[in-house]
Every structure is written in C-alpha cells, then in structure tokens.
Amino acid sequence: MTSALRRRFLAFAVLLMWPAVRPTLAQQQEEVKGSVAEPSDAAEVRKQIAEVEKLQSSGFPDRAATLFFLAAAKQHLGETLDALKLLKECIALRAGFDPSGEPAFRALKESKEFTELVQNARRDFPAVTKARIAFVTEEKDLVPEGLAYDAKQDVFYLSSLNRRKIVKIAQNGKASDFVPADRDHLLPVLGIRLDPLDGSIWANCFADRGVTELVHYDAAGTLLGRYTSKDSAKHGFNDLVVRKNGDVIVTDSLDNAVLRFDRKTSSFARLPLHRAIFYPNGIALADDDQQLFVADALGVVRVDLATGASADVNPGPRRTLAGFDGMYWYKEGLVGVQNGIGSPRVAAFRLAADGLSVKQSAILEYRSQQTVLPTTGAIHGNDFYFIANSQIDNLNDDKVLDATRLERIRIAVAHLPW
Image (cartoon, rainbow, N blue to C red; front, top):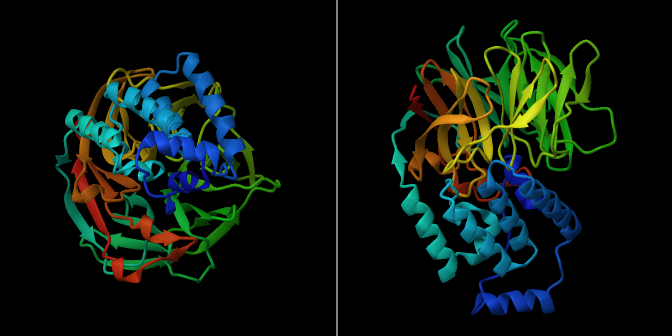
C-alpha cells in the first residue's frame, strides 16, 4: 500500500496532497490514464492488490474488508471509477466501513457518488456517544500513541511520539514523567505493555526511516535494555504483548510480520502465519496465554501458540474486524480502537469458545468528540480507557506541523458491555 497509508497503520500522520476533484470522475479517470505518472510505489501496490484479490477469491471471511482495501489501493493508483465500484459493493455489505475518514479518498469528498456512499454508511451505523472524559493532560504536544494500565500501582502509562517519552498518570489525573524526554534518547514511542512477571514496562519505538527498537524499563523507570533486529530489513515495531514465560511478541507494521522476541538470546524470530498480513498493528493475548490475536488491515488472525496453527477470525455478516489499532483481550473477546475502517470507532467483539468467530458485538463510541483521532487504550476493571484525540494528523516526519492547533489530550472511558 502507499507510504501514507503505511504511516496510518504505524500510527503516524497521513498527510496526502491529493489534487482537487475534476469536473467529472470519468474525466479524472481519463486524465490519470493519459497524462499523470503512476506513483513511485505502483508496483508494490499492484502486487498487494493481486494478493488481496487472491485471498478474496479463496473465500476470505470478511469480504467488505478486502473491498475497502482494494478501493483505497485503486484510488491511490488513480483508478477512481474502479475504486468507487469497489466502495459501493463494500458499503452495501453494511459491515461498518465509513470512507469519509480515509485519507486515500480525500480527492473524492466533493463528488456526488462518494457523498451518497458516506450517507448510506452513516445511515446503517449512526453515531454512538457513550464514553466520558476520564483525564485531560496538561501537556499539549505529546501526540500520544500507547496506553497501558498497572493494576498494582493503579496508574496509567502514556507513550509520546512527539516528546519521545513515557508519562505516568495517577487516578486523580496527575501526570509525571516516567521516562523523561531525551534522557535515554528514545525514538518516538508507540505500543506499551506491562510484564506480567514483574510489572516492568516494555515499549516499542519507531522512526519513519525504518529504524526501530524494543525497550525495557523496570517499575522505577530505569532502562533495563533496548533491542533491535539484527537483519538488514527495515522494521517498524508497533504494538506488543508479553507472555507469562517472558516472551515478547511484537507487530512489525513495516515488514508486515509478527516477531517473537526471545529474552535469553535477545533475538527476534518471525512467527509463521497461514496468510500474508498487511500492516499488522493491534495485538492481544487471551487469558490462557496461548491464544494470540493479531490485527491487520483485513481483520484479525488467531494464532495457537502451542501448535503454531493460525486462522482468520470470522466476523460474521454485517461486522468487520478490520483495522484495529489498539486491541485487547477482555473476558471472552476483543475490544479496541478500529482506525482502519474509514472513520474510527471503539468496539467490542465477543468470540466463540474456539476464538475463530464473533458471536456478539457492540460499538462503544463512534463519530463523536471522543473518536476524533483515537489510537490505543487499556482495560481497567470493566472499563476501557482510550486516547480520544491523539493529534497524529498534526505530526509529520516526527515534527509538529502547526503548534497553534495543539490541544490537551483527552483520555476517555467507555463501560464494557459484558
């Protein structure tokens, strides 16, 4: 997919300078074909189109997700008529996609065809406004991406892309630096999780040039180690989980992979999956410490860590599991922020006993002031706390674009439905 869409799944800014919509979409299509050069990543995009079309023809459980992915790819290549045809079929499936918030379709926003598709999507899925504000930060320029909760200390940890630090937030809302900016010369900090063994903190750091590392801090904020892959490939560690045996498993959004970090050897190994994944982001571990769930642009893959077997989780009709940013295990299912479905939402999905299908779902927040630019969250009891306004759209190449637009960060909370 495009470098801009890749940054979307990496939780960085997506700032595409699309040309204005031309008089008619047919004229736009002809102009693209006749005089406008293809994007530099056209070969990569066409390869991914072929891979997704193959998945689609093999009976992939979430057809709407493949259609949305293909529509965004086609639009990036300038194939607007094809993109709209795919979008129309996607929206007709009523799975929850709303293309109005997808940067790939920015050039289409004033077209009648696109406007009608958005209206249809919003008619099927009206706004949900149940969440409330839990905390508001004093600092405006954090541009946060990761959130974690420590039950023993009753505090939250918030990671910052822009300030490259980790903040601790007490239940009264008072914030302090857990890892101060520049002390350890961190890259922008993304996913953050607690170690179930000792309460230490693991976090992923990533810069847009393909440099990334996994860092480990003790409960007092002292750096215990920093680790990176030894191979020559470009990697982008995004989110992570920590198993009870000490293994850390990270999503690599740049290399389209899931990596297992072995603490004893300080090495990373690729976790084999049954299909190619596209911009993996959210990751969750069930309470049994055996079922791993990996989110990508098309849905959620369940991995049995005991056997290595993997399979796609079937969302069922009129649902999608596509595009999770932060994703977490809660009781018998998954909860998190779906950023890759056009307009972001917070949703929960109760799974069947085998973890391979959805039996119940609930939208917790959608098209509200608490889903302006949400990214990740954390579960505290029966509540889901999440970053409501990350301001990632005001960050590009690790720099704030417009300081006058910065505002205090809102951490919202939604009660979980079961």
